[in-house]
Image (tube, rainbow, N blue to C red; front, side, top):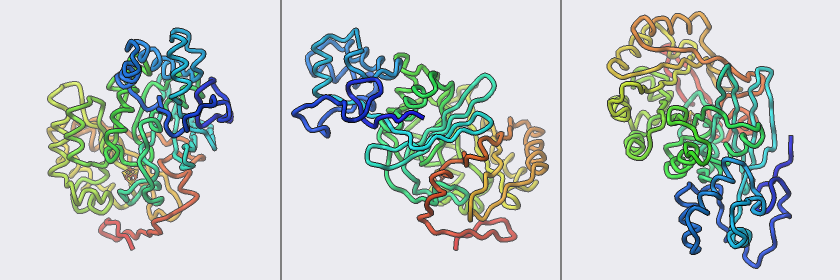
Length: 385
Ligand code: SF4
């Protein structure tokens, strides 16, 4: 693994000390990594330069993963000089890289303030997916989630979000074909930074990812699903995990604030009547909790009339989770029942088991700030104690 810099403004990969000396303190420099194309053009326009310099700068950073201002050959000397004096490009530093036998790679990335997040690369036949984090920790306390055990620390900036993709592209030498905002954190609780980063992901002068190839996964913050519909058209996935409010209130506590009778219409509205699009519903299969025939029937009823794909996820156990994964036969039977009803349903292949590839597990090995323990009653409801 390379020892990459956290901050760089002068060479492609070099230590922090190579940043050019300046009379301006570092904290006043503009971080270019977090700017979308329009903001990059606006920056150079404000310097009295033609906006196309901003577009070229944006392209050097994201399309070519070049950080050395001197190597940006189509920028004038004046622009490069100004960048040297006033700008920086912040990238994360990998403090752990854990490859799995199936090709999955998990990186623990350290941010400029020492906080750490996880980013996971998952190669498959004909495609590859990067799972990107949006927060350090998470405040939403989903009962089966390793990240929830760490508590909430802070939102990531747009620079820190897009920096994960930049890092993966730089490290792998290619852009992953798909992005899922499904790593640590609730992306819709960090709305502006996530939207700006997703705009960069889709930009033709950056990573060129089509809207179908960028998926935002939310636990169901209804007002921000409605807000997202007005400013973005990325694919939407929802962490559903239960077909009724009683069980979902327990597994995904945000449901108490935004129950299913609000969530389902908001998701339908997000599709805006486009025939080819659908919502992906994530459904973690928890042994004797949400995996019975009764739950399958309730799920079919719940999703009736909503273009849907259900993604069944075998639970990836972590210490003291209080849950076990449903057996394969039950997952298969659950999926077949959904398919027979006309739903599209798949089972997520378990990837990177030996590297704790589920969200938050690697960092979660280190700490459990919530100190929460879960008991499961015979009626299938999870109870915190
Ligand atoms: S599943 Fe997602 S929203 Fe829920 S606690 Fe984990 S990271 Fe947060």
